[in-house]
Image (cartoon, rainbow, N blue to C red; front, side, top):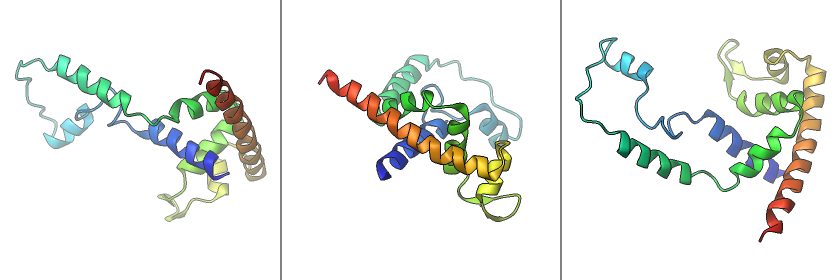
Length: 144
């Protein structure tokens, strides 16, 4: 079971990583607005698009080798299972509304499920995801 949880973390890391995505390696416009207090300096005119493209390609090559496996598997499970898994693994620190750790009740509320349905969807989702990972991994190993 630890393997499936590790794969889920790889998926979520990729899902939430904006600054490491190709094309997003620099400062965002929002960050620049904050840094320069709404007065963003004009461009210097020195075009860096080719260098940005090269850096973006380098970042794409550094993706975890297991990402494709888990990304394909996540696409094969039901939306209710998917949302329960994502909620359980993303909402796991302090809930800023309650100032307490996230509970399954909180997570269920966020994805518009009752808590029993959420728990069932999470449990079934993990089983379904594990099955999909096994199928895809077998398929990927056929060519090796």
